[in-house]
Amino acid sequence: MPRFKIDIQYDGSAYHGWQVQKSDRSIQGELEGALSILSKGEKINVIGSGRTDRGVHALQQIAHFDWNTDMATCDITPALNGNLPEDIRVMDCAVVPGDFHVRFSAVKRQYVYQCRTDNFIMDRHIVWKTGKLDVEKLNELALLIMGEHDFTSFSKFNPEVENRVCTITLSEWSNEGEIVNYRIAANRFLHHMVRYLVGSMVEVTRKKMTKSEFEKLLNEPRENVKIFRAPAQGLFLEKVEYNGADQF
Image 1 (cartoon, rainbow, N blue to C red):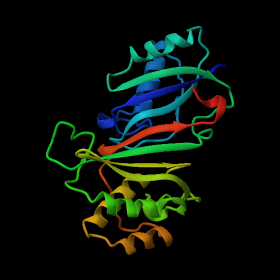
Image 2 (image 1 turned 120 degrees about the horizontal axis):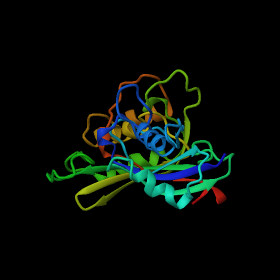
Image 3 (image 1 turned 180 degrees about the vertical axis):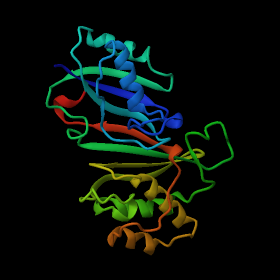
Image 4 (image 1 turned 45 degrees about the vertical axis):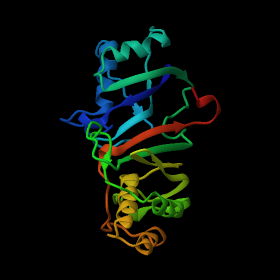
């Protein structure tokens, strides 16, 4: 059976995250619903490269599904989009080998978190309105995150997750006018990890936490620690990377 890989963008404002919910709308649920229409009622499971939380957006989410169809690959993208809401869009579709897996084959994921430092309100659903930020101090903290660390302190505790070590290859704040962006790339991410890191770094600059306290949480990981969490709406899954033939 052919395996299809799709590149998706979505505004997560109206959704309870990626994963299918019993009663609430989800990105996965909308995609599976569109495929059910195209396949005349067949249940087709859509697997995502990661589970974005409620209110989190994606500039590039990657998913795969198995579907025995006579439809040409080039026709699948417009057919799906014709049955999806306007805040979810399939950008590309390709056939991939049967052993390809969007989650396990990924080598890097990158997120961007947007903070607005002025009083402009029209993008309030996709930024955290923080007020002025000290980008230099934020980057001092961001540098500490680089490399391999146990992020137990900076994630929602889940007893089923035994390994909480992630390797960070990018951690950087940048000032782009009145928007301050934080970009982070890693081999994997834990639940709420980016939001905890962003929230904590911002609160250090606001003197609600010290730099030494931040470092201690990073170097001496603890479960269920009281931590600062940035709101969901500023967070975007920016890209997912694969090696060689797994790329589009």
